[in-house]
Length: 362
Image (cartoon, rainbow, N blue to C red; front, side, top):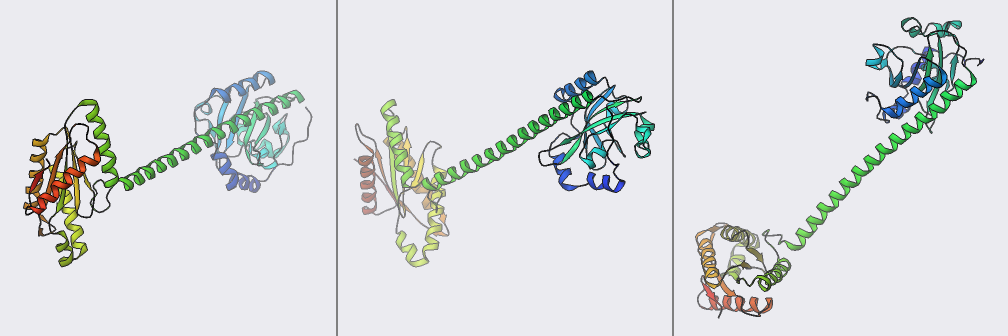
């Protein structure tokens, strides 16, 4: 194929093109630099060699100071192993011009004859098609090389051009897959953030902010669940309702901040006295409730006394406080409202009887 090669680029033009930040970002964003050979690219270079008869064909990606060969057919050592070349190469000229470079005999023009690979590799004929993105950035070249002068045919150039387009389609596919993976990771991160937010919102909706215990809403829901278990398994269920004795006096004398600290300390004491299956909730200002699954009246009384003694012996926020408790065990066909009402009535009976005591509901 007789063609006049484009005016050779100067060293300054080549260096400017190689180090152009926008172009480098396009090259590096492919994610292919320094990657292992892949059949999808090797198939193209093998086909190029077969159709053109060239002994060497390759796909080069131009980094700032080296040519990286994503695929190379026919290269000997050490290039076959290192798969990269530093210094000026023929691929730099299509980079600057943006046009194919077809040289039947590279020694016929002094500028091309001075390219180092003419001496180091014995290159005599070169045909390179720029790998251009849709944004116009040249990533490298799809090339064929011969070690003796040869006349590249129009068909040779057409083959290389079509295979260059195929290489770019493969590059775009890889970039699309990378972008999709990045997007998927971002979406997963967002989903995790939403899940964490939902968990936090759910916790806020069911947790008493002051004490960290369950709130009344969570307590009511949990009690209904436990009643369902009783219906299925016919196991005992008990409930404690307790109140801090003379709590108003603490608030009035020492302030609400101290009162809050006392409630927090009591919550911790109660939590230490409970089992893993028990549920403790703050159901009012200074009122707490404890759901005791699989616990009969005798067991409930033992838990209640243990909690009462523990609170009385603790110095909650530096204050000696006591609690009064009402205990009720679920009766046949009883609902949540009735169970709570009986425990609450027993609590008032405990307070009326002098406080710092436990009263079991009838």
